[in-house]
Image (tube, rainbow, N blue to C red):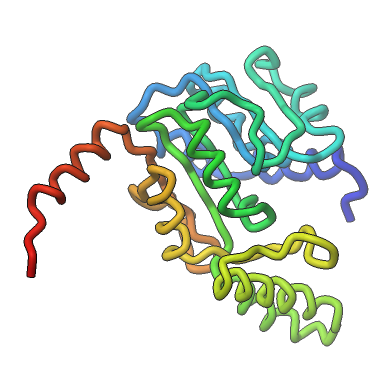
Length: 244
């Protein structure tokens, strides 16, 4: 059992180091068509996913998370400390100016945050035509987790995914996310339909999927559309709309 942030960071970095080279670099590869000068990882954990950007791009890399000793161990082993920055913050209130980053990562962190507020903030700090790399929990993640944990015969083990499903269904049906009291820190799933709806509100569009995309934890390559493109699209539909 991991007992503190440093142990967690060591374990995360160990697992990252054991990945095949291609799997370590796929996030960089997903954004290879743009100039990468600044990268943000929202809910970065130990910050291991920023390391390939440090090595391959020369970008300034910023990780945010709520851990008290955020980044202390990772920075101690990195040779690029001047370009690696960690900030204690929440995804719902990113302490950065508009259009600050070329690439934003959010890898299995959105389920723990206020989804609408976090997506709006990510769009705000992402530059036009910037890339947003997102990995989420789909409903199937919790259904399969329940099946797996039924084998343990442990009420506590089985209860957690059931609670997350309940919170997710409430969010899906009401549009409201339970985050206070008992529900604080509980996960919710994200459907593609929900994401596409929120993306459309925030000038974002799904471009493709990352190589690790699967039915439990889908991965999306999302781009922020330039305002001119949005205007031209709106103008096209306005000019080509016909009364039925």
